[in-house]
Amino acid sequence: MLQNLGGRYQSIPSPWADYTVHSFPDASRIDLSDRQSLMDAMNGIIAVNWKATEPHWTAESSPFDPSYSLILVHDTAGLVAFSAYRIMRIAGEPAIYRSGTEVLPAHQGRGLYGFFTSEVLKCSGAAEHGDNGVLYGWRTRNPIVWAANAKICEKVTPSLLDDAEHPALQAACVEMCGALYPGKSLEVPEMIMRGAYGHIKHHRQAYRGAASLVDAAMSRVIPNSADALFSVGYARV
Image 1 (spheres, helix red, strand yellow):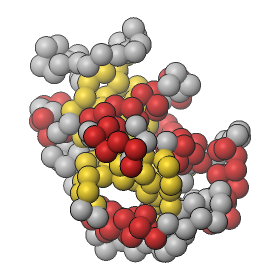
Image 2 (cartoon, helix red, strand yellow; image 1 turned 90 degrees about the vertical axis):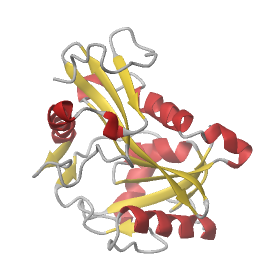
Image 3 (cartoon, rainbow, N blue to C red; image 1 turned 60 degrees about the horizontal axis):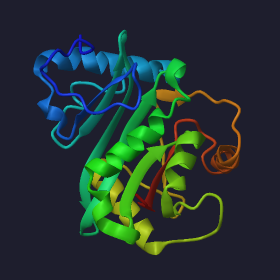
């Protein structure tokens, strides 16, 4: 099991005494012998957080491709959270795509999502872009996730909470989506991906603050639980 890593993988500094953190800029560096148990654990967290009808990660759609990076958080019992991301080039410049971040409910509220975001930005070299920010994309229908990612962006499309339009970001959004999901159409300017989550359904909950406003906007734009928003912004470090 991957919670017993021994000395085969080097951990990175953890802000929490009870968590061990491992970062893999190239996810293919994870040994073949560890992959199935890790993928099962990742799918297990998704199945808790979503209503899943089939595994999200599979051998055919694997998180261990060299194009993926992974950050894993374990406690003594096993995997409690993970974040998968990709470093790309969009519109001729470096870009980040958050492929998926999940935290077990018992471990939510401890700042893991923010920690993952900071690590992703650090590993991507986003600081080198100064005040301009770095292109930063994500796909979701979770209002909390959308609000958290939009909060670190100077501009974002689709702009759910106002009527602002950003043609350059819209073009980057279309390019990024096409590179990641060939053949999947993206409805512009709403940036809707129809049927993106046909195999998993988001657990609705009571939202507060900005997330409640995002939830109301999402309910209008994508009332079908299988649909998602594909978003891109300029992230600030």
